Length: 499
Image (cartoon, rainbow, N blue to C red; front, side, top):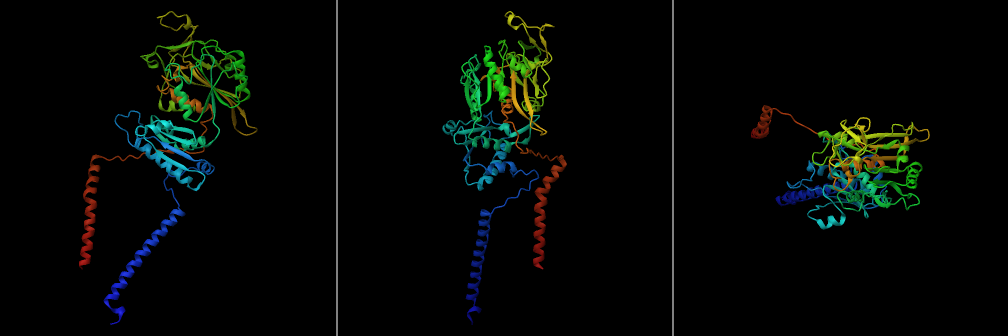
């Protein structure tokens, strides 16, 4: 018998064939994995392109040349005792993790950037959280020592307290560009006139919460005493005056006028009743605003806090500052408040846009004789003397100029005036929507609200409505229908093989 016709040769050939097939199989899939690793392609076939960064974001990422570290402090799941945890935590985690994966993938081709994402539980790792200045339920971006905090509220667009769109790419791209930019916007807080102190932790007159939040947003902060300064510093991106108790001098007002007029300045003024004159009347008049010397009262129970007598204010004005308040019916809580309204005698200036954003209820009035009221005297509206409501308590002005012959204008100065100062103090900042309106104003006045050409991602919600009968029918189909079909198929195959 020849060797190749023997049973031993047959077994040897069969074994060799199996080994060669196994080697070919391993080599084939190993080669496919190598090609996939070196020349990977991804296709986003979702209708809303959920897994694709916008072209603008990808263009920004290719220009980065600094390492970026992202720290996520969202808990994996909310404990029953954690009342600060946001609702729909699982969905938020999925949205954030999915988006960060897209940034990681997009930056793989940029060898200059080390993009790292860490998840830190601030309660389980308190020492590291304290060193980095981390708070729960946020996303932090670091490049060197420059941090930028993105809160959960900045990730979504809300309508009637429901999330309707995911804005994570806009927020994350802005944060990355902010921390990678070596230049910081600098904010000066005015001092020397009894203003509230950004370094004080006092609940009534301290602004340490504001200071910490601005630092977390990568702003540089400093104090400015106009009585000692020769000019407003060139690096002033914004000047803030909060609760001045003494009038500004004429020279100080002139410095602010020059800053606002010739340097396209930005000013946030928080002025409460009791300081009259403020010393800034001419400046405000140039910008079409008047701060009345009154104290606003409102006896309506729907517009007043039962415990403290504070004003409860809502608005439906569609403006970048009040958009979130109008869409979600959020309210502000103001303490001592004066009216700040468009000046009725202002000159017509096509370059000046004035917008009253928050108004009192019609039942409110501006009490002019508040200084002479006796202790325990109940204030009342005096026709012809007091100002009738509704009264504006937040008014903004913007001066724009045409850009050559182009069909659009650019802002050359912005002013925001609030008739209350204590609503951003440490003890009130977290009340109602007080912090929301402050930071919305900050974003608008410093142009930080400039929207990238990055579309929001609508949140898809699917709901399957089934009657009780249909649900019962579906349950039986899943329990018996599918197994029964496989059983019938198996019987057919068995019967065919028997024949």
